[in-house]
Image (cartoon, rainbow, N blue to C red; front, side, top):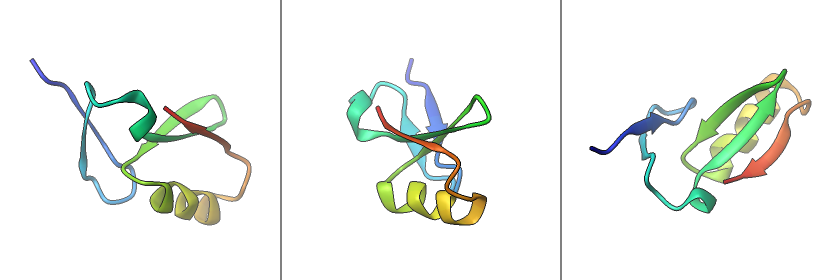
Amino acid sequence: MKRFMKCELCNAEIADEKCMFAVHMRTRGGEDHYFCCERHADEFDTTHGNESEKTEG
């Protein structure tokens, strides 16, 4: 059974089984935030300050 995550910016579904390096993630305050693309992850940084740690995968 496929599981999905959602991009925290646009709510696009991201398959949990997808290659782990294709998902963009930021960690802020010990909490992981997932995004469908690097652009949305960068926009999250701009909106929430650059305090997050960039991680792909």
